[in-house]
Amino acid sequence: MINIPQWLKTFFMFNAGHTYSNLSRLFLRLFAGVMFLQMGVRQMLHLEEFAGSAVGAMGLTSENALVAIIVVEIVCAVFIILGLFTRLSLIPSIGVMLYAETVMITATSVHGVAEQMFIFEPGYPVMFLGIFIYLLLAGPGKISLDYLIAIHTINEKDDADSEMLEKA
Image 1 (tube, one colour):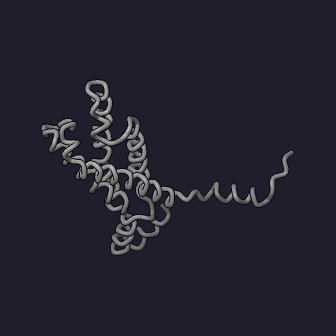
Image 2 (spheres, rainbow, N blue to C red):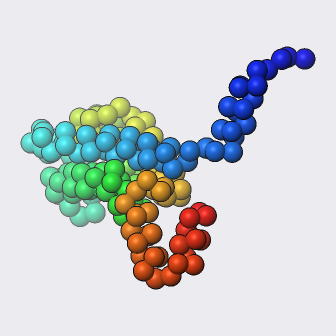
Image 3 (cartoon, rainbow, N blue to C red):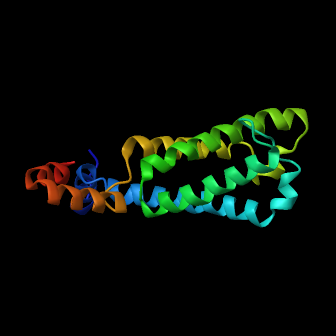
């Protein structure tokens, strides 16, 4: 039988029950939010270049669609980073990534403009979709403004609900 040191057993046993899920969600929010913000800022700085390659959607012209995408990327990214209205801001973000993936699939096969418009390689929208859907399901965690607002609201409402939120 293998002799495993006690400190190693303790380390793995302790970490098995304490997963640091709130810290993990903070990291994921910061990572995805900064990447999403970076994309929006790059598109905003090079708006004229991307306007010609943009694809219109939902009755918007290509330029208006690009401006709407940029606004969603920047505003929602800031909300995701702060953990403010996180689940609400993830919904348009998921929509933009679904749109981006659709454009990437159709445009690359048709006229190859998607890489110029979205500044990333194919596959990134799917990565963002996975992160955004996870955060939508898991929530922002306790290290967020959403949590602070919930605590404040519940403390004003009733102390019994506060205990329920702490157990979550």
